Image (tube, rainbow, N blue to C red):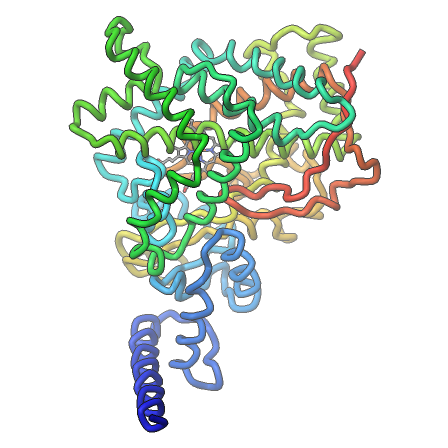
Length: 492
Ligand code: HEM
């Protein structure tokens, strides 16, 4: 018996060493780690297991940043990542600038985005930037373009801003701004993208399911090597996990059905979700494909705004000087008038623009990833075809070499903006896979903050809570993990 166990242990050890040799052979040309115990094979095995269980963006970042600081050279280091691919990790803004629009870096890597395909199907989760992606993207661009936002969605934005203020005034002694912003931004997304009016998004049980979607989507940033075999189990589970949201989906599908049956609305006036359903029908797409398209739209249009908005309100609450300066600018434009802003008004809000930029720096996407579809030569180094290129945004946005006092919240650091800083601080990504929702998001957030600032005074209930007390955690975006409840009063 003991002999059998010993043989089995020896066999596992040998198999491991062989595996280690294969790993080392694959990465030996550009591996930048020191050997472990002087042996490259053991080093490779060590890093293989060390990164195999990096499931979430937060864990990945916590592991990669110290490695970048220790081993990165000239803003780049190669790493055997996610247990499955060689990654070139970019930590230097100059390199980022050179590579961000590189034609060989137009695709998204399987390793980092495949997980999203469990429940999303649209430009975000399409890996190749091919004709399929182009078509999806064209549809998004069409529904998010400036003329649509200004003409079709603007009124919804302004009405919803008032609604948010009213909700915050309902329980002025202790406002959960996160819940309020989540409800309102999902309501806006339901109205603009899905043309559905429902109070369901305001119900606490529905909100808790929306938060769950956030958790699921952050976990989906995961290790495909482990997760791929589980895909078929995970897909039905993801439906179960988002329970109440299936009620929202039901409403969306009923609306779609109704619009398709009535056949009266001209094609270009259809809401985005109905248009997607029509196309899905034409392409003989399955019901699951339609669900996945709806989920992507729901996540990209609702979740993104709610995270940014709730955190920005939290920043304004804990930074009284900045809040008053932002209010002062509003006062200069509107006086005491609480009328709806126009596009011209929004264009005059320069301090608010800087506040948004500085907020985005803290609420950053922790990392962005692309796939090298051919060899890339940069600064005398070759990034080979098939390498996953990871832009370590969460690191570059706080490098003291580029940002004075990086952990101080200072909108005025954007008074002068170089091309380089613009590139690092870009909250909406870059290259052809950047965000199509930038205009929609910016207009919406500015309208809401303009109303909130003009109508409300607010501070944390816990008076001593400071900006420095905020603990940040990375999901798809980086967010405050411990936002304080707010005390609110109407400005007179
Ligand atoms: C403040 C709000 C938002 C921020 C900070 C943001 C940020 C981003 C970033 C950084 C990317 C690039 C992701 C990557 O490279 O992997 C992205 C992609 C995307 N965003 Fe946004 N986004 C926001 C709002 C929106 C909105 C409102 C929509 C749609 C209604 C949207 C739809 C998309 C889509 C479809 C993609 C994928 C594009 C592609 O791969 O071609 N986003 N977003």
